[in-house]
Amino acid sequence: MSRAADIETSKAAATMKSVETEPTTGITHPAEQGAVGIGHNNPPEPGPEARPGAIAAVEVEQVKVRVLPDGRMTREDTARYIGVEVKTLSNWALVGRGPPAVKIAGRAFYYLPVVDAYIREQASA
Image (tube, rainbow, N blue to C red; front, side, top):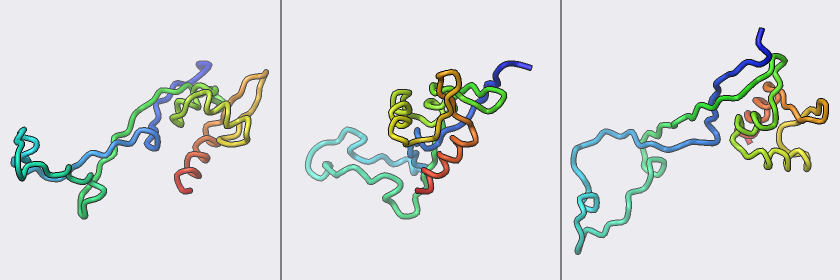
């Protein structure tokens, strides 16, 4: 049995990109064709979330984190998993914010189920 299991996991909350998925007509806006002059200085169209009936797709980035056999992750892997900098996670631990850490031999570890619960809690808040 290996010392640690590498898993790929998704983090949708940190890197969401809106992608418009409306059908195309093949007609381009005059501003897109490079037209200038009177009548062609229209403001940009609003994003898909502002248009009624528009559908937005979410692009999910896959990240690799190392999870030990007992479900622990290092601070670096936890930061990568939730999409923040390591220093941010350290600062959160100092002020009692973020997922709770467990100190083992002076190093901070985070249990995967606890981190997942923290992410779900933040998404619902």
